[in-house]
Image (cartoon, rainbow, N blue to C red; front, side, top):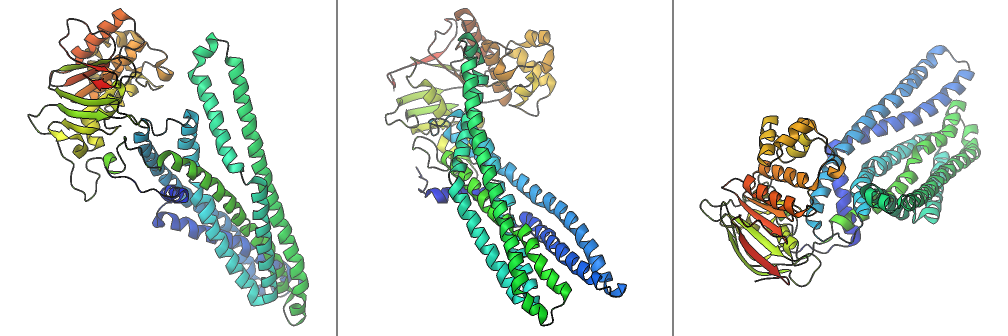
Length: 572
């Protein structure tokens, strides 16, 4: 098995950040337009001051026409370039954000069966939503502002240096010292703020999730008040950290404003001698006002560095979820997640062979992620079309671990062939097109019945959906509930456990898997209903498909099944 190379934390962060950066053609227009917009800011203030002082000298109006037109053009350009820059840069960032979310989700898939079990759900959710969204700031609020502010500041200092080198040097020194001081103060005050902010946001998300998902239990034990207190504490803590960050940002802006004022006073003093030696009053006014204009642009630099700290914190959290090497028991990225037809110049993945058994297992061993000892050892099994195989055993014997291995969410030792081809040669994505898993608690989306079914086959028509619902025994129920527009509620709160399992079976039929694995489909259902549910599930599966039923419950006696008993993590 190929192992990922072990990278240092900062290397993992850079790899995450690299996925958030739009490509050069996408990000270049925003940078160029930003330079033009900020250039107009400096030019407008400088030219306006020149025009005011020159007008006071009452020259012929023809001498002022160019400046008058220039002021108008720069005023319009500042707003126009800024608007177009926002469109271009945000369009590039949002387009890349969509790709980043998809890549992050893909990286999380193989880690679900044990690689991130120590993480709280709120922490994972905050990482996938808040931290991924934060990464778009790398281009919008870090790289682009630094490039734009540095470019415009240097060009502005060159302009000042043409008139007064002393003024340019004084302005540059004041800006540099102010920036260093602002960065130092920010680090001293809020060096750990970003880490605390991310942790507090995750804690609040986790508390809200617990309140939403366990409302029935909380109501039964009068736990709403206690949970409300936990949410309020988490919210208060988050607000305190955000307030501290806001104070730091305000202090940074104040320091830059102070530096700009000092620079202006020093320019007035050091530029007075060149003024006596022939520099015009209008030019003198220009070099005095330029530090204020530059400061308005240069303020982006310390702000960008503060945003960089937030981005790095988010990148570290995402890297902790998605970039660390997978346990040996989990198929390694990226090859196992390759989708057929998307492998570029790579050789096409193998395909099942006609006439071969649907599923053939020899000396199979499976270890759950994070465990040392295998839960399944020396399993031998052949599944032919039309067969139903029951994997029986007590809780904790490894039945669900086996199911995860059969859909390639866990790795295996030994031989596991689908249609005569080794599963590792097929690739994980292709395996999941052939072998599907209906989990113990199938997820029901908070949407109507139609969308819950089309999740498995987006192209399915309403007629096809109604036919498959009738096959799983929900035809009459659908008519009584109002058709495919029936809402199912959050996590299926408006339907029973048996109905949820039948909807999961309908999805499986729409997905048209060759082998359908049901993991404890009768959990939470009383005995009589469980017996009928198992009978209906197996009867609905086409004759050219196979069923693997994982359960510790009894199977109806009239069903023809092949039973395998798992005891003490060993198949006997």
